[in-house]
Length: 186
Image 1 (cartoon, rainbow, N blue to C red):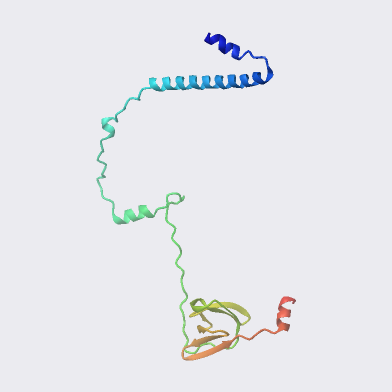
Image 2 (cartoon, rainbow, N blue to C red):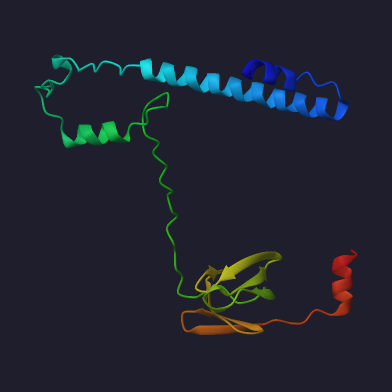
């Protein structure tokens, strides 16, 4: 009775019922396949055994005594530490020591002629000026020297230089339109 009723259920020839029955049959086949796959996977998982534990060999746990017979001096240690591994010569790079020319301070500074204040930059401790000396423009920060004159302070439109007991002030002159036009269109 059971098998015949199932078989008759899926032998329907009327079109609306035929489509519904075929979808139902496809779902039943997929559920059956999923159930079989779960049963097969579960049985394989149940048959698996744990791998055997392999203990390390006794001699691999023993630490050998490897201290050398002679001692390394501190100089040799430093040489080994400083030796670059990937350089061909395997010697450390020693930067050449710059040799500074002896500074000769004259009692009388060079005259303050030829200095021209071109611009100002920065604020506070980072303030500096752009000055022209003999046609060459240079940037100077506070406490730097140029031509024997040290830049002492930078104001809103001025810079104060000193050399020994002498002091000179440069004032920033506003550029005229003619000179600005000449600078843009030479």
